[in-house]
Each structure stands twice: as C-alpha cells, then as structure tokens.
Length: 394
Image (cartoon, rainbow, N blue to C red; front, side, top):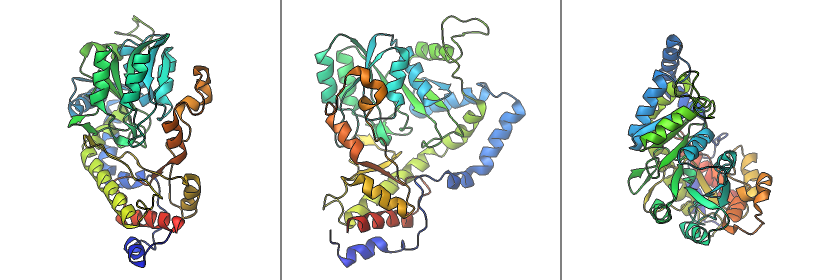
C-alpha cells in the first residue's frame, strides 16, 4: 500500500523516538492518586474491619447513585456478580439464558454454574454486541428448554441495543441481566449502564476502567427484594450469623477493595472522557494515514444512541496475527479480546455448536485487535502506534 509523504509525515510528527507503549499502564494512574489510595487503605487498617462493613456499604451507596439505581450489592468478583444476578432473577437448573458468544468466559460459565443452559446468539458485525434480530428469532424458535433470562454484554464499553432487547424481553416475559463488566459509566440514550435491566453485573478487576487492587464486583438493581436476596447469597445464604436459609456462597467484598474503589470512583467520568478523546484521536490518525479508506483497518463503530467509554479500542484487520507480531517487535502492547468464541470452547462442546453456526462471532475472533488504551496514554504514543501499523501495511 502506498502513502503520500505528506500523510506519513503528519502521522510521524513527534512520534519517532517513542519507547515501549504498553497496552495498559496502571503505574501512571497510581502516581496520580497514590496519597489518596494509601490514606484509604490506612483507614481500613485502622478500623480492622476487612470484610464487608462500612467501606463496602459506602461504596454500594455511591455506585447505586452513580448508576441511578436503588441498590448495589458488593461481591468478590465480576463473575460472582453475574452468578448473584442470575440467581436473584430466578434462573434455575434446567432453564436457558440467551447470551453472546463473543465475550469473556464468565458470561457463559456463570450460566453453566447455576445448572442452566447457555444459548449463544450471534453478534452484530459492527458493534460486536449481541444482535437483537437474532435474539428475536431465537426466542420465537423456542425449543426443548425454557428461556428464563437474557444476558446482553456491553462489550468494550459500548451498550448493547437495549431498546430492542428490552422490547423483546418484555414481549416474551424474559428477565434482563446486563453484563456491564466493561461498561461502568457507559450509557444508552442517556441512561447509565447498570440501570437498563432488572439487574446488572459489574467487574472491578484491575484492568477495568474502574479497577480495584485485586478482584471485586458489584450488582445493581432497582428491586430491593433482589438486592436483599443477593446479600444473603453472598454470605453463605445467611441472613444472620450462623443461620443459613439457603445454600449461598462466600463471595463477600473486601473492605480494602471498596476503599480503593471509592477513591477511583471520583475520577471515573474524567478518565472515561480521556478514553473517548483517545479513541477519537486514534480514528482520526487512521483516517489520515489512509488505512481505513484502503480497508486495511476497520475502526470502531459507535451507535448514535450509545455513550461509549472505550474500555478497549478495538480494530479489525484480516492480517491480525501478523500485525500483532509486528507491533510486538516494536514493543507496542496489544491483546485479542477474544480469540475463541464461547460456543467453540471445548467445555461447551456438549451444546452441539459447530464451526460456522455463529459466523459473525467466529470472524470477529479472527480479526479483532485491541490497541493501547488508558487515560494517561499520550498523543505521541498514539501516533507511534498508528505509524507502526501504517509501516506494516506499506
């Protein structure tokens, strides 16, 4: 592919001496909030209250306010948040839950752990989110199983089409649990992720936009009965000490994680806006380099109804693996989210899906590539990333 010297110089300006560019650099974030974080951890250590307690309760209130919901229930991971949410919605062994095959493993495994059946429905080729038209067809097709819930994933920080999905769910009396693990601060038509279904699961894994210093998760809901049930489930099914009304699990949130998250929550809108600015700059640079018009790279497509918070900036390219190796040689970090669609994972073989059954998810798994994305990323680093991709295709 040929590029004019003008375009190449426009991309190259200020970027030729850039060193390694990591996919994510949490050290930069830590340097900005170090004193606040250490003070929060010291507060927990001084209290000697390390599991649940005042810090977790405060974070729950703050997350509920942030997401515009009535209740939030802290737990030990995003995976457990999905598990709690599904149980609160009444999903039982033998039920079926529709979800996307193009997501992190927990979106499917949380359904399986309840004893329910994951029903994978293909994705929209542009947004990577579950395709409502295909969901409609699957619901109407029915089968030997009862569809109890719909679990859409707001992938990469962009909400799924919640207008159509809620319409389908309402028509067929199906509960909706949002997998908002990558979408804290995202919105659909101005409404926050976390408030768009009967319940929503968040992850605060260290790589997320709002990240703990270990594992942590949260479920939001406007149904207080659901919230109370999840609080009991997360604590061995116990409403009070040594009384167990059901078989729950130990999935309580640590107070130190809550304290760290409370510090970071104050900055999440600012950090998300920086991610959005970086995404716009990436797209501008790709267009300027001629990479999009030549179809070498396809940049993210944003729904006009979505407030995308770019947990990841993901491009598509048919030469993904070769490009990734080229960038690695230049010490530019990338990642593939996700290289194997869930319906093709060995542990889901019992479901009977074959290669080609969900073609859009399978194609995305071969083409997607996440580029460096975090609030402290510099413009020069972005220029170097795009210049390097231009060099690969030249």
